[in-house]
Image (cartoon, rainbow, N blue to C red; front, side, top):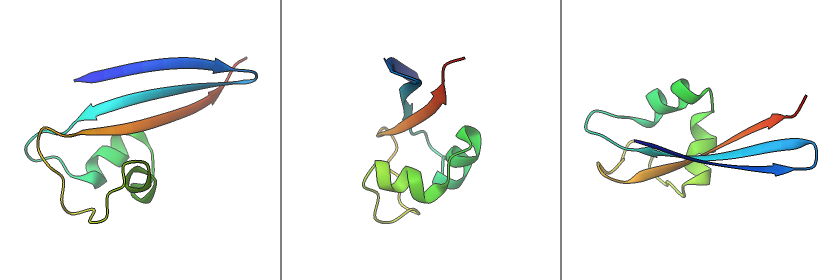
Length: 68
């Protein structure tokens, strides 16, 4: 269900995760699970209508953080 790639860049770590859309999913629920705004998920995935997700598609989710 999840695929994660982590790449270290100077003082930050960027993880790119893919979420596989299942029946009943919606962008609001996915955004809450990852603590990412709906508009940001829509922008990263070129989603024009946030109410239309296609079962079986994958959403790219970027996670940003900093190394200690």
